[in-house]
Length: 309
Image (cartoon, rainbow, N blue to C red; front, side, top):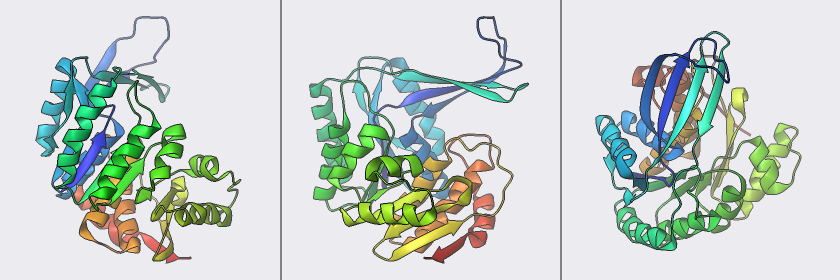
């Protein structure tokens, strides 16, 4: 079972408008509502692949109930900790005429120490049945990077692999607990190491330094140039074939789903990187966020080039 953690879950609302104008009335041509938050964008592709997925984190109010109900069609089991306040919404406005995207991200509710202690108790029980745990995204007000440190410690004490995918201070503080895998982009790896990372060799050296500090696998996103992974098995680079990308939002989360699947099945690092890259690329070919078609992924899989550096 793959256990995903979304501490700041949301309802993601997408509005399609023609020629969006600030300060005026804008008619929405079409809209969609889906359960969101980076952890849930990991849950969906992992479930589509066929894994058993349990989603946890915090939800509240009517919005929280909607998030749980909306996960059912994906076959994702909900095991959230409930609070009284309403879960947040995040609004994405797509301007069909100018091809410009505008986002409004609500901060969400504020948690107390009591809320987090209650969640920790629930989390300990869930981890017992997990093959791998993937923690992603921001945290609600009232929490800081020590929240991820505490949760990583619980997973490691249970002897399970744990993925941390976050940014900024949350990542900087979280890696002190040495998760099994992180996936920083180039800006994040610069922040973590203080290195310029102007070329591939600099990036590899930066990733190796994080690996030497205790993170088993450091996967670095290189955007259109693919990705690389540094681990005990060596250093590997993935090159993805040219695709007709429709929506790249959430492709990093889909890649995390691929890493979680590989870790849960005990695949080698190069094969895990290949699968993660294929799922991410397949997700970019579809309009829905955190979604891919297995047929697309299977076609891409043999086309992913994995080079040992």
